[in-house]
Length: 150
Image (cartoon, rainbow, N blue to C red; front, side):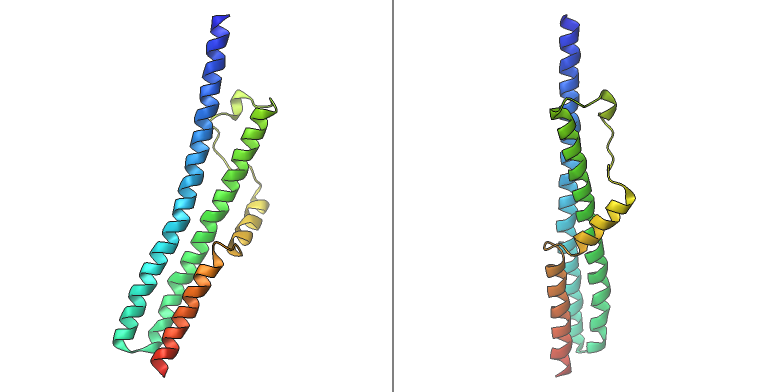
């Protein structure tokens, strides 16, 4: 009888460890989103400073490329975060409903099909936590261009 209790404790510890792994992945994706914004802002600021010092408006379009790339990367990390949150929710729901199998433990994967992942990515591009930041940067870039031209 004691052995069954030990196995049950092992499974509970394994479930907790699995949940911690998923939470860590979700946290890293969130941190990556913040890093994308920080790197983009730094890079665009440096580029705009150099452009203003050289007084050449033609170079302002160079700053659009990293802004676009970081915009896509930020949305990608946000979509991954959403997909891992869904995996987390499915795992916890299985646990609470008593449907969790030991084969579900330590399988770290996004449970959503590829079609849904693309949909999530496109939704992330339109997310309020992504597009306003990059739109503001684009407005800033165009403002600098107009400032130099006049």
